[in-house]
Image 1 (spheres, helix red, strand yellow):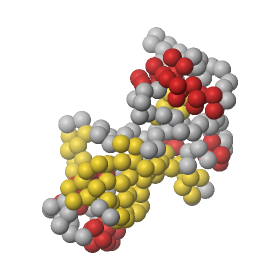
Image 2 (cartoon, one colour; image 1 turned 90 degrees about the vertical axis):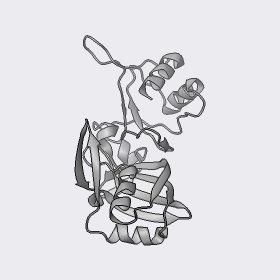
Image 3 (cartoon, helix red, strand yellow; image 1 turned 120 degrees about the vertical axis):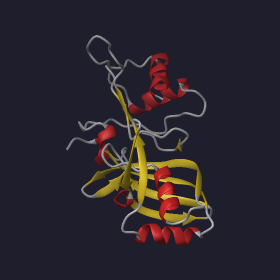
Image 4 (cartoon, helix red, strand yellow; image 1 turned 45 degrees about the vertical axis):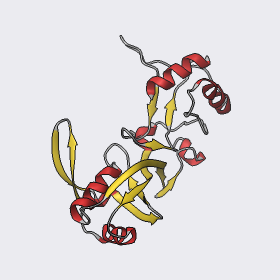
Length: 204
């Protein structure tokens, strides 16, 4: 994704800011990482330019050069020093859930559980973690499960881990497909808001 945007910026004529040092890199930071195989309607990124541009000009120039299926929906000028990856605190996901139990029963058991254990693998090592503190809300809608979870560097819930925890603790038959990230949020004064909200963009 980063390479795609790097190429789009070069083709667009926008003058990006580069890091200093032996191997200069285009200055860009993306929000919470998106797992392989997931789709998304809400990705956010910080781009630093060496010139001042109007946000709409950046959006239009990038959309003229990005590949089909990928587009910039909205833009704003961030003056806050925290980068977007560190700023994201929550994320909405949904996916199709196959289960012998009713989705309503699964939601009830997830939301009333004291803990939900799942195995998380990283760098060849596996450990058991309790993902219940990372779940803010779970809802059922038709054949889909919708999740509002904590996100970010320290607290990030992959919905596949929730499915694994449901399989391990609630229903062994459960399977999930079609994972999609619907939105990401930052937190200001205890409230979840869009990263493009004026309050989220401004310096504190």
